[in-house]
Image (cartoon, rainbow, N blue to C red):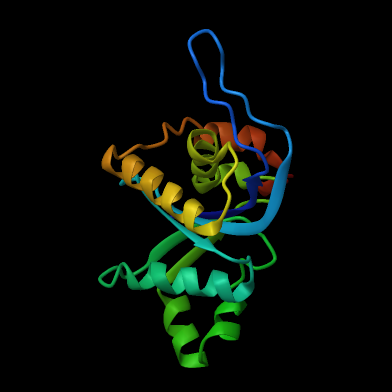
Length: 190
């Protein structure tokens, strides 16, 4: 499983758009009204081509912990869930202890095998790629409010999951040994 998140600024139109007509493109006024922000948590199961997006009001440790709990509970028979994520300040297992009782936090943590991407290597997390695709296909326009955002994201998620869209990952171990050489230990002989 790959995990990442991004924020989305919500913006309302201030003037009615002029629809496209034959020989004339649609016209949208450059002015808009800010209407807050929302956060999008992305969980991407790369091998199955399945993703889940949860829209929240904020990006806090408690929001992160709740998404992790939902992830663990959605795979009740899995012995371990391998989770790849970046090093964002809220992406810590300590967040589970802030959100839940110690025994519940421990239960959730024991079900996870967490791998953090290297510093400046968040591009290794496929959830970041999926967030980019979602932005290009669904969110690169004005979205006025959270209910509209939730609806649009759910439609996009359903379409991508039905098609079982996967990522053609071409970054090999050999590539990693070159690009990420500074992360591999060097052995001095002699």
